Amino acid sequence: MTIQLLGTGRCMPAAVVPNAEFEKTLDTSDEWIVQRTGIHERRLCKGESLLELALGAAKAAIGSVRGLPENAPPVDAVIATSASFEYHFPPLACQIGTALGLNGPFCMDLSATCSGFVYGLDVAAHYLNAGSAERVLVVSAEKLSSVMDFTDRSTCILFGDGAAAAVVSKGSKPYVSYLACAADPEDCLYARTGETMVMKGSGVYKFAVTAAPEAVKTVLEKASLGFGDIDWFVLHQANIRIIDSIISRLGIDPAKVPITLDKYANPSSVTIPLTLDLMREDGRLKPGQRILTAGFGAGLTYGASIWEV
Image (cartoon, rainbow, N blue to C red; front, side, top):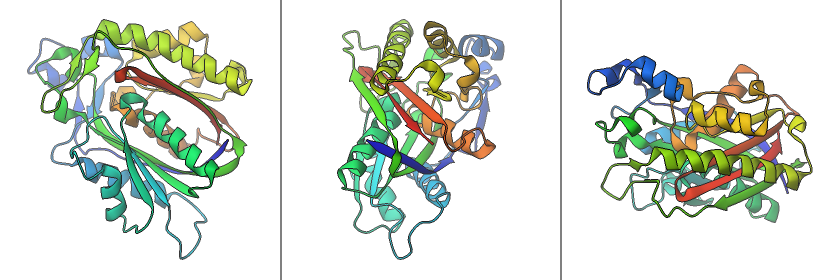
């Protein structure tokens, strides 16, 4: 299969919430949070809806695409990923399509928690290579503040809100993926409908530092590539201890692993497209580079993909 990244975009809530805010209500401190998570601040919604964030990211991504054909819709498929949908129905993807004024493109939601963008990109790649679509918009949007217990120090300091998106088409450069799901008999991370998030940190950590390296190694083997062939390892931004452990276990050059959780914390499926958009904006993401993306999250979902810019 092949895939081409045409554009990226993001839309983050206006409110920047530093660690110091949690000192007012929790037994914690900025130093404690930074040492254990690497997070200094996050964005949290103060009135923004999930659709507002998703639509903002979608418009930014479409607006960054150059050379779109005239008299044709900018995309002919919309895939939305989230772990915090605000509606049972209609799908968020349909709401995005309607708000964009699209008429005809097929739209669908996908729920794979923090692995959402990796899964969504893979679904897009299959539709593109099957000839069912020419350009696909993949939007990851999260309003995790809606399911957070702000009296639970173990969870509320970790997560954030936001949205990021990518427009992709079939291209000339190879795309290889590996998706999987591990059993979760202990219910390490979940949020029942109408209730707040519950997390067993030790279980999540053990899963992440095992599953992510497995996904990275497997997708490299499928692509017949080595670690030195990858320019950027864009990992899900869970927390710095998990990322550092993955880097250590795989022997990856830390300089090849961009970090964005310091300013944005962990907005679940948004972290990977957010990182890509920030890298594109500051010039780190360059044509010809080979990217490996790896996600892991509740479910327990995980996966990785390799593609070229």
